[in-house]
Image (tube, rainbow, N blue to C red; front, side):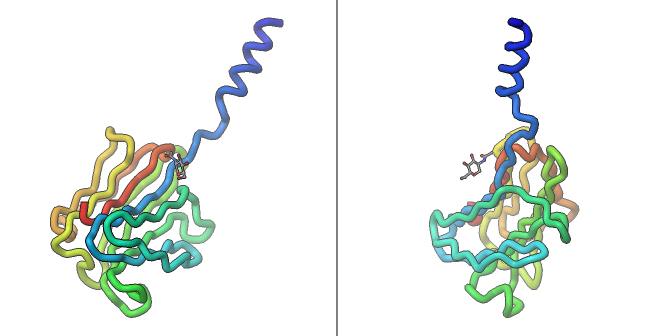
Length: 154
Ligand SMILES: *[C@@H]1O[C@H](CO)[C@@H](O)[C@H](O)[C@H]1NC(C)=O
């Protein structure tokens, strides 16, 4: 009887599904940036104000694309005018999340430090000292239960 209640108590204390972390973007630059969250649908634009503006979404699996791409530009219509974009992409894979940083159409944040890092310090960080991609693959993987944050002008 006592044993049975113990099992019941443990079942309540241990949820079957662990908490899912967030993909977060923090704008520490002294200028506004604009972000779109792109999967099979485009969510945005979201303006991130200078020096502290942020965006956050819980890691999700997109039914069509699998992962999501958080695309950041300098101007408010940048996604639609072929402006340089810096893209923080993530892919939720069970208990893990894969993450990457890339530039298209130029280097939107050239001269500024960009960092993508999990709250779990055991996982690798992506660090671009001058806003441009170093050679080679940058893809990292970490526990999906913790937030992975992309900081602009870190
Ligand atoms: C994700 O963000 C929500 C809302 O801000 C927060 O309550 C939660 O603690 C975050 N998750 C983690 C794993 O930090």
